Length: 178
Image (spheres, rainbow, N blue to C red):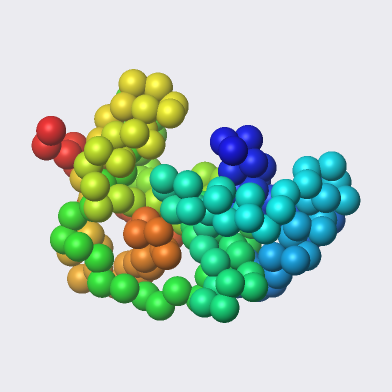
């Protein structure tokens, strides 16, 4: 299932064209269309397998529509989409996990989404540490979201609880206490 989950994330977050699939402007695709496209491109998956992948995903990367006819990635997109999420007031502090070798750039110019649409922030210190460890020796940074919000920065909360914002200027970033 990990390979199916990764492939699904690739398709729904970054490259739907890989299997000649088109997402709507909010990132949704009909499940029937997704399964047909996966079968056509040699990655067959049943509806039951898809539901197992979605429910087993620890990070909650996938969202099913209320009527269970559509699916999308909850966040993490590199393609331009409007997830239709309302702006939300964030907690006073959120966390960002990164690798130690990125610190000079981060404290010099802030956090930017790189290949993604948004900077991702976590409410949970350990989740941020886990994200940071994917790229080297992990460091967890704290983000003063209360001050950012007071200065007009907009935040969104994805279906899976990940907080997102366009950028985080360096002046709002510090080291998180362990």
